[in-house]
Each structure stands twice: as C-alpha cells, then as structure tokens.
Amino acid sequence: MRSWFALAALMLLPLPSLAGPQDAWTVDPKASALSFSVAQVGSIVSGRFPTWTGEIVLDPSSLAGARIDIKIDTRPVSTNNRDVDSLMKGPNFLDVQKFPEARFVSTSVSGSGDRYEARGKLTIRDVTRDAVLPFTLTITDDPSQPGRLRATARGRIILKRLDYGVGQNEWAATGQVANEVTVDLNVVAGRAR
Image (cartoon, rainbow, N blue to C red; front, side, top):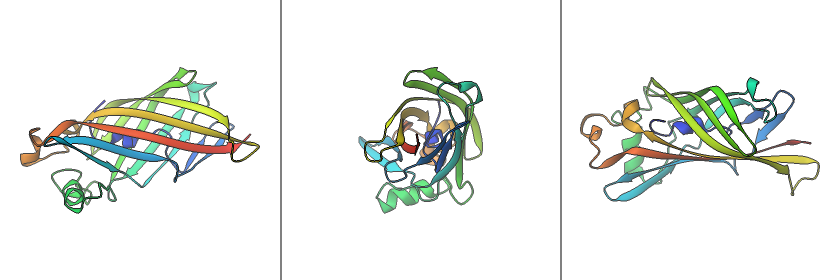
C-alpha cells in the first residue's frame, strides 16, 4: 500500500465498464467516485479524480480469472482550490504534463461474501509498487430498474505519496503535507439480470 491516489488507481470498479466472464457491467459515473484526502498543516485537503477508464473482469463465484486494469487521468485532479490544484498538477507533485496517468493492474483478487482484496501493481509518476486494495462488493436487485442488477464496490487504501515521488524538493518533507494519503472509491455498476 503506497502513495497517492493509487487507488485511484485502485479504483477497482470505477470504470466505464465492468465485465465478468459472462457479465457485462456498466459503471454509473454519476453515482461512482474516486476521492482522496491528506493532512496539510493541520487541516484536511480533499479532492477527486473525475476521469478514469479501465477493464474489470470479476465474477465473485470464480475469482481465478479476475482481472482489473484501471487508468486514472491525473490531469483533471480537483480539490476545488485553484492554488492547491495548480500545485498538485505541477512538477513537485503529480507532474501531470510528464505523467498524465496513474495505473493499477491486478495480479490477483481474493475474497468471499462481500469482502475482497485486489493485489496488484500501482504506478504513479512512472514508479511502480505493489499495492493491496481491500473492498466490499454487494450485488442486489436494482430497485429503480426491474430486471437489472446493481453492484456497489467500496474500498479505501492508505498510500505513502513519497513512495511514488509525489512531493519533490521542499515538498519531500512531511511537515506541511503528510506522507499518508487516503484514497476512497465508491463504484456503482449495473447489468441485466
């Protein structure tokens, strides 16, 4: 478990489509979110990564063939604070001009019931490290659309930003911005029964 928003990268299910061996899921981008928070000089800065894509093959009854590949566009990262956004996008943090994408690729998915864990490789700023994303997954009838199923995945990972080089020069110290970044994902997807 390392840095930044990897999760973001770890977004496990927050992508345009989520397909299992016999299941084709479609993510509801309005109901899904990839967000992060980090302590900065005594307060919490929160933000989100609004743009990501990926492929998910996940059948809870047969995890051997599970595959998750999530790509997060770092360029539109937003904290709703122009100064913070500019700093995050710049060369001392995400350096979005040079590294416009973060990526999580699973190597395995395990679990049962509603608790799962995706192990894989998370890449941020061209630094790749092992990462583990625990998440819950519930699949229910979609109350708003008879004949359809609704999947909801929720996960949280705490990453160390400095493990990925997020925080260069004076920002490599943790006095102003903490090393630990919490990444939360909430993915809602649907498919026909």
